[in-house]
Image 1 (cartoon, rainbow, N blue to C red):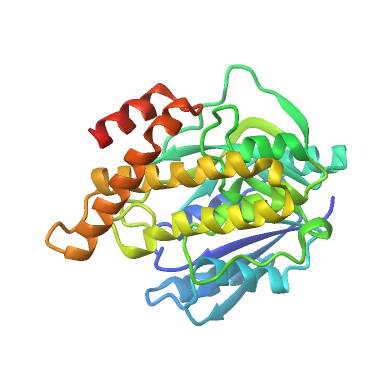
Image 2: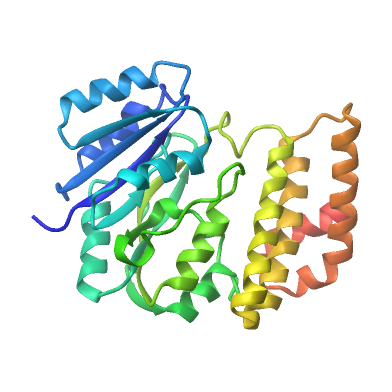
Length: 311
């Protein structure tokens, strides 16, 4: 049967997407799952939907709690998780049937602390497009950190929903509560503490780009947490592994660039003096960082966007 995997799914205002998510999880080819639904004080029909799903599948456990945000919900799920391994799925996303079987096989067969797959960004339901050449590799801590800091031009890779974690290695971890973009800190923690990771470029996770989601709506102050999280990581790096200080500093600067581009593309309230001031400050920072960012390994499309933003 294999070891028990606890899959933690925070649930908040996703009644339009919850059935798609849960259907994909219960249909996993790896059957020995503990599926923990954490109702984070959702004001819609999600609490009732969770209970109905639990009545249909004995592997499902439900927690109802006051609203505390994604990190709080994940922590609550981890507090009761009894599995040997832990995975996370966001409740507006969905996964391929083989995801956890493949990640478990990679992890348990290599003695790694975690296994990772690739993701596909989706604005609507569509089949997964797998890479032409499938590969699986064993990474040491250095390879994990090099990838996290995107030293070789890697794409953004902080989402913990693509991880399967050995609870013995990371069971004491707590997600940072009260902020968004908490995955930045979590991904750094897992990368810096793992002895080795089993990594595949196979795509098993559908990341739904919900226009009403936390990270894609019009600019608000909580978006600034993205910079704060990277600055928090920078403080840890300075103490724990200063050899990555320069790379981390560049990621802090990239965070300013990312936030400025989001303000420009997603829009912000130009009648709000506070947001106008935030936009002005971000633009000044990014202009100051421009020469360094242009020397950093980034796709040419990002460098073109960067240039347009500072002109």
